[in-house]
Image (tube, rainbow, N blue to C red; front, side, top):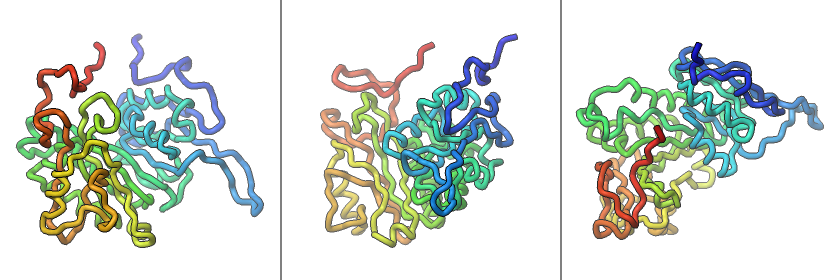
Length: 331
């Protein structure tokens, strides 16, 4: 009998390691949430008999973990993932196979996020409400993609509703910061109305927001890959020191695009108006009482006269001096 690739044989399972253990193998698709990897907290007592254990970084909750690409970046940035949530069995098998080299401190839950209570995520991570430093994830993007003909017509895709499941966990877990990623079509979907609703809902969840479009090729990746990023800072933290989580400034961001937005109805782009630096754009600040600003697309310098492009075209003739837009998986 041929084995489903989303399941793992005993030989595929990682050897036991101190921080966590595999307790179940993934199914092809998730439904009711099931714990696949369980964290093991060492039984060490502190001077006041409190539970003590070491983490190599600030605690993170990861939703829509996929094969772990964002989580790898988060760990490289100095954070520590304590729980991952994923629906797809193949992705869960990949997350398990990469342990304990990566995600060694993280629990793994497979299931439909609509059926997964936030309390289960927090319990698996060993966290209480408000203790997570970061909640990250990229909800499914197929319904927003400009390559999807239905998305152009504004047709409803049930996967789009998972964005609000992401925000539900943000509201209930109350992390200090959240990071959400999606395709550029998220900005233009339904004539920007979806973006307006998302930002309003995220702001109402007690977070101050900075958002924008960024391109991987501006950060040293040899591929054009434009993405929408939204960073949220819990409002009590923003009010304490006035700082916001913001997007990293790409090296080749075009000054003219920023200046156009800067003067538009006198809307400030940055929190520290007197210290802003147009060479390092931290993104567009969201204000609920002002008109929505659409972030400029990243600029490909040395191409098309330095004009901003919206990345609507996927298949164009390659140029020897440029990275590609697509990376095809081997067949």
